[in-house]
Length: 495
Image (tube, rainbow, N blue to C red):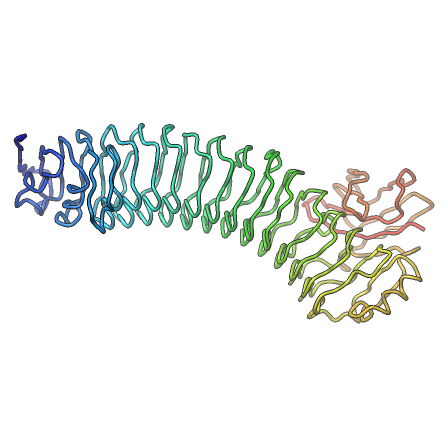
């Protein structure tokens, strides 16, 4: 049997209560090498170890603050133990190896290939850990709730990072993943409140459920262009300012509540191929104003824009046939809404509590079917519903809920849907639109009712004209921006 060396080293520079211990051992024999020195706070291990040795260290050396395993090799071992599991492979740090320990630093074996599940979970003082370049797998919950880690560099050898691997690391500020990782799994960085920089490799095709949920410092994020799916609540509660996915040409699915409750998000861009949208995906975003949604989008999911009152309604795609439950609930900054050209059904409470609305516009040849109390909390008698012509007035007056609006014909009417405190005069002379404002107009964009851009001008003055003769439609949405970037919206109809 191999001999063991046990050296007890007392160093002058170590605090009075600290004890440094260096041992050389073979697998399963570290208890003999440690002997009565289980109170050591610093430990250097050389030789070979297995799951039994990690079990001993975890249970008996409860004062351990640092451990150096750089010259240790982990051997395979099977053990029937609730704490370490039944099997541990060679060169793999066992599951729960240092779970909840007092470690503040560790040097891992140079030949380590995997970090087991919950290996460092709950190590609240662990601030210094370098993942060796040969590690390919980081297990579920591996560094969960490690409150002192400020940065994590995942080496190029790592191809799999488990669920919750770095979740609840309160001061983790930056993460760089260098390896060909395909999936950022469920809750990998969930609750990392200080995370402000996350660099992902180009290999990532999926960002999983709650992967960056409640990352309250994450203001910027570069989406890998290979991403095809963003899971439920992936960025819920983050602080993104812009979510630009326009280059993610194969992005097919956006999950439930995926970008909800981002307090700072102003702009979202999606590619044309995105087809699946989860409920509430863009809800509770108070300052979100600009979106680029796929023009092929045919349904607004439940809660999609609830409590996101700054969105410009002209950006809603014209192909929408169904508007989901509570999808535009509780808006208080927008005064008008034009129903998309294909609207067939509006579900329960879709426009509940829209306190700022002054008019709705429908150029539809039918009155869309309505769910339960679609306009709950709105005094419909004080809101104008503009419809295509006098015949359609009769259609809407015969339809439940619709008939409660002040219904008027759109034909031959200029609709001033701008803040009444602004002075804006928009009139047609034949096909030419004349606009006079009380402020300098930096940019004016004319859309049709599907949201398609017809023309854009930059007057730089308070007076401008637009010739609409080349446009087949007679119904327009005019968006005017002043020099400060503030927008006003007017709905217009040419006689």
